[in-house]
Length: 313
Image 1 (cartoon, helix red, strand yellow):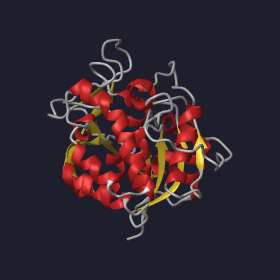
Image 2 (cartoon, rainbow, N blue to C red):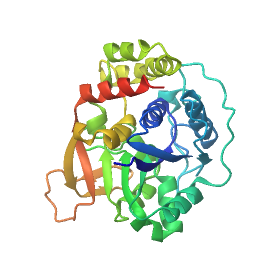
Image 3 (cartoon, rainbow, N blue to C red):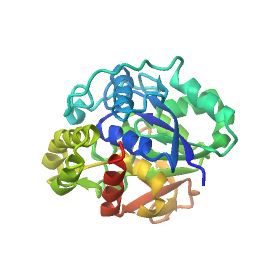
């Protein structure tokens, strides 16, 4: 089977970086057409820089990286330096990128790529706020039907929120964009906190990254060493969740995940629950299902895959 063509839309972020590395290490399953940066974990200038740093770390300087939207559709930008550090990739010491940004805007790249490929052959993989995707859908509604699938990291149900009591960070940053995407009619697969909080980088698993004894292995171990301090303190967990690589892992080994096809609505009005993903997990409404909402992951299988693939880089 030919590899699945994907666009990674991202706001790196250490876990975004690992997701990108996993994709670039898996050419049999995924063909990365490009990386589009969006403001989120840190401002756009840094996310666009970090995406190129990661591509260079992987030795894949041929991947075009585009800068996209620098703020949410209707709101001031909220960032997460308290988790990811001032650069977004705190932990390892990585050189500034030599590869330039690709010319043009990320939104235009998304539109042009979907139009240039046969319908149903390009998957969008958003790892951050959904601003770029929603903007592309608003600017070119014809592309929605051309999307094969949207596999995204965002939202929560049983785990509720990580940036507010009710909301997960990516959805909270731009709830209006999320609302547009979830109402678009595109086929959506969601990796919520309910899944990612089971994908914990324990000391043993991080030692496996370090034991690869490569530039990539050491960098990933140092990234997780850095950002796990926040989650350990917050949740009392034995390690940090690797949120975004769940998206890439699903493309490679979907059998690692299980969930339900349900209705998911985005709260855009309430001050109390802004950005909440109201997931009808128990199917208690008559609202039509619009997303495959994952609920479980084979965590050890996930880390076995991740370690095996990172060893290729």
